[in-house]
Image (cartoon, rainbow, N blue to C red; front, side):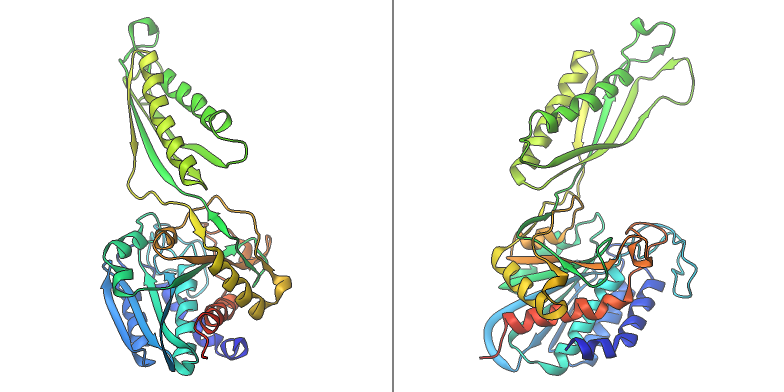
Length: 393
């Protein structure tokens, strides 16, 4: 199987690079969706459904043998709003848009799996090829779920993957339980009373409130969260004043994110941060509003049964020495988590290349590029999962 996919990787790479050259942001992936749907139809996929969550595509493929079981395979399609620094001939042709996270590669992997399975149909039951829009901060997976994805295409299990720079090329990592963290973005708006910097007693300085919130918030992790749990609060945007040296502003703002692997820790930390913000502001005679922004993602939690299948499939594709089924969780986030809340499944990481190699350049970096050599690895993993989950009896 992997040999057949490797032999055709030039074709898969051409698909991937075409998508890379024409990146589309979340819910705008019309060209990509059209390309996907046309290929699925050309390969004789039984049903091709478009327009799900605006630009999502689902292909339905029946196996040689009838069965009530169905497995979902998912890939994300969207690019990032950033400029590309690469100079190769397939670099983005659109300013301010780049496939800087490898979703072009994920799409090519799922297309390659669909290409192979549509020729062989060597399985029992149904495969749903789920091409999802808007993973990058817009929760396209959540929109698909809310629009009835699993009512229309009921899955017994669902699988997804992500390339990972820093993991050696072609190795596959995953774990049972939380693999990726939740992500909650927040804004804090502080209102004080402005005045002359020479007379601070006549003002209510919001910068003092801001500073104390930043420091006090760290105690939520160090003193309110169990040492056996993991969470992080990061302040990433701090603003006060208008550039002058002698004016105390009347307003200050903070932006940041909170990440956790346990839902209880996540909710408790958000609640504590909200209370702390109000209480710190009040103690200085100011007021503050704590706003959790839309687009929050829960933790990505892998199912025990699906992990066992993923382990067997990964071992078959790359060998047990190249599989880590007990990797440490990562603090990044992924909206595949919304699908895993509805259907048991497993999300895996496929090595894009070791640090120091071309494939080791971090995602969301303007010089990042997906490693085309891992397309057959990811596609073979998906195919092997199907052949194990939906084995002909």
